Length: 95
Image 1 (cartoon, rainbow, N blue to C red):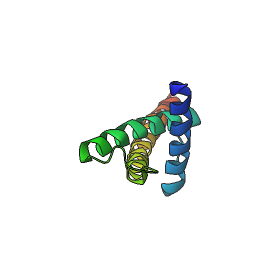
Image 2: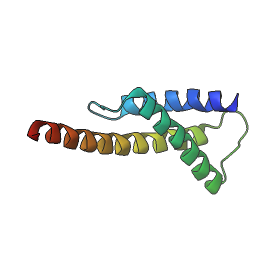
Image 3: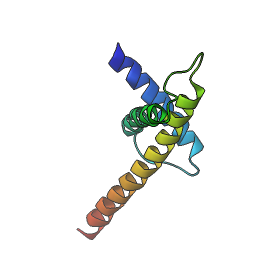
């Protein structure tokens, strides 16, 4: 059940990150989900390092760290994805 929950959280975080980032992102949904999962892991690590890993009630600070990490990761991975995809298109056009 832990993996299923991680995939669901990653999917939601990735979609929110894509919605927040201005412009169109071209990365596929599976890559966005993985980036969201990585954002959750990084956000949890930051929250743990700052001592806000677990609080009473809803852990809003931890969720904010996760979302910020997911936004940064989705933006960076999408830029890399487009750079790689752009190079492939140029190589196909030249061949």
